Length: 601
Ligand code: GLA
Image (cartoon, rainbow, N blue to C red; front, side, top):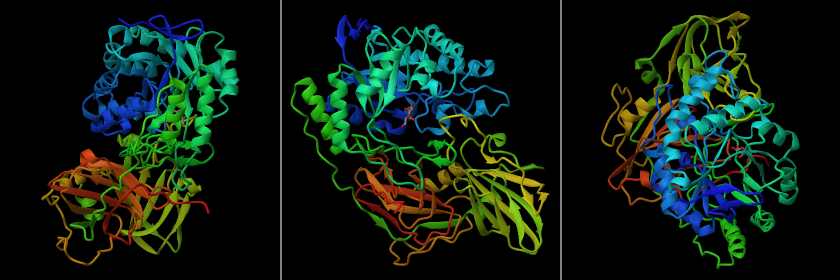
């Protein structure tokens, strides 16, 4: 069996120096029917390795579940890497950052008072042990020394940017060894002396993360990893986006030039990202360095392979560098063919959310408002309802909203409290006895820094004109149930109170009230990637044949939602959108490629 080791100067594969040329590809951000295509394009680029994180919370929705089927089939993903003749690097966390909800840590764990986060705290470590017990068998049997693709396994992630509990790192490494990991273990940290010192252990190989000035960063790494090969474990060749901020793009020429210098030095590299993919559903994370900034649905990352897998100008520039490095001809790659642009002018059905909410199971009563975490609502929306007596121009102070609250009085919208803006209060119209609804959206849990694990929902007291509001009823929105009922072609959701829509041929475009659930029938078509345009829509979520494509928001910069070709059916396709605002446009439109808008002028 092959032997992979860390030598005095180089990585050694069967005793020979081996330079790792890797690309990051997260199986959890790509439709499983497209994994092989993305891996093949990595190979064509000139890479020899695929790196992936493992997102614990993607596999473990509850404490006693561990799902490795379908899109969670990490074993199949690693087998496809092996089938392509490539190696793999696995980074199982337990914390991964990655712009992923809660940095991959399960909310059911961190909701418990006093449970440690990324420390030696016993309940945290016991849960990690359970995670490793479930995960490691499928990694261990695919290690290179057993004939599989896995070369190395990472311990934690940039721990030096977070903590200094060396015993925690040592325990994780021991758990990995006890679980059967025999290949080299390593850590990664930003190319910063203090972080590299805190984030590693003498017995684990240190690597660094950076995106420019490679010679200088490698010199920093060398101070902390005095022997053996140098590796940039995350060569940031692009960047992620936040709602309400401009889309990031980086210059392919600069990236390629810097990569050439890095490779010429003999260092190994992992392109972060080779292919970013999509934060489908409610999987995006957020950053909070003074201000809360949720990450958008697309994880395009301006990577060499775009969100839909199309090779970009950056791919071509990097292929040039890698071909020169290998002394082989550069791979020829095609660009994006225009995607089909079907239009459906009129929905099949537009349903106000209020009758659905009133008929839903799952309401509970509380004196003070609970958090989402108290309700086991780990992602998505919770509706808080109460009745209040409002005086003239009463001030409703929600104090701490995580993350966005839409406030309704007797079903009519009266305002939004958005954490991104530092809002906390608004004025209610009065006077009178009214039903107060507060619809709170978790926009994504923080994935970096001390706010990892913070709770969502209405976290502080809710006060009306100085008096705490009590007597709440709450409902985590059962969106998946509603969508499942609406998503079957030919079905009409049970309990519908909405009028049937006009026939699809009608020329009238019905404006959508908010909040609402809208359904369209898109005629069957040949499988092809699609880009759903959300221009003219407000804020919400879209499902395509039951698959949650993710959030849209007029805040920009993202203006399209990516529909992977394997979701498109030849017979009939059903699209369901949750729209939170009153949207001026109820037509369903697809455009020929991704669209981004400039946010800051
Ligand atoms: C760090 C983390 C990654 C990712 C990048 C930014 O390097 O280790 O998980 O968050 O930042 O994309």
